[in-house]
View 1 (tube, rainbow, N blue to C red):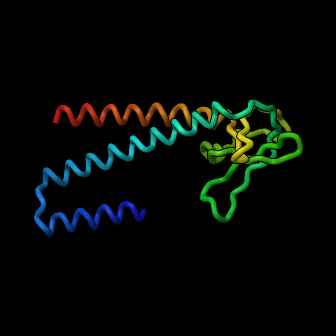
View 2 (view 1 turned 135 degrees about the vertical axis):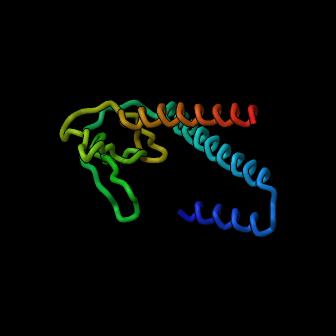
View 3 (view 1 turned 180 degrees about the vertical axis):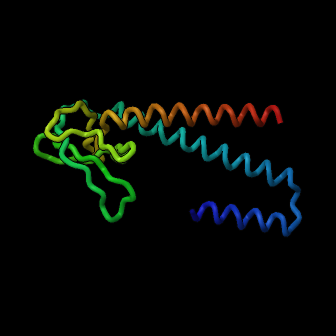
Length: 145
């Protein structure tokens, strides 16, 4: 939310100081491109962490929303130790897709003490492909403009 407010203030200042509309549009375009590129790099980082994590079998434990997080996290138990999933718990139309006391294949990152479940795999793949698609669309739009 603060990001949008900062962008709005910068836009108003540009209009007050009579900055060319073309420059404002180009800078906005560049900022959006950078945001998509950073998102793609973030998903590359998640892929690298996934590649260097250990494949394990885990039992689903619970989903919990803590005070400091906006979303619920899924927790799994591996060898008596509970680990959170790196991404928020999946809920689609309020339906949770986790089943208690069921074994799942996960990738455990012991260094950072989190894991990737089957929904995290999908999030990484879909997020990365979407980010790359948007970066390519931005490049094509810039070339044609």
